[in-house]
Length: 97
Image 1 (cartoon, rainbow, N blue to C red):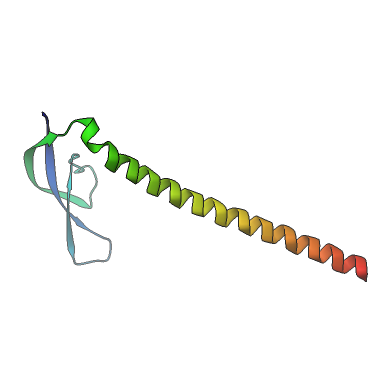
Image 2: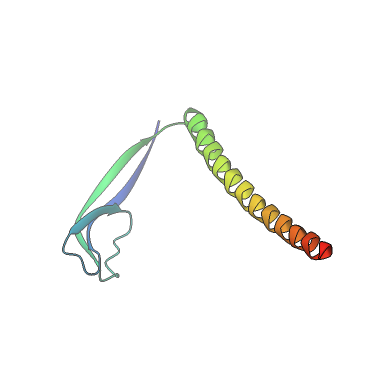
């Protein structure tokens, strides 16, 4: 099994107007951004599984993404179909007058 080592940074972040400190971990120091303060740094090593071991999970994630995209596209198409139907109904009503 391969390993992957990265430096990670624990960051403190305060949203504008808030008095609550949020924490996040990043590969980037982000100290060039005033709202982030580097609290700590740590080298982390991960065991990286063989790609074949993760293929099913990756495919499942892609299928979920595809399903969301399909649902959004179908909703948009339905909206346009409804607009077309409304225009045609108006045209028919005006022709009857």
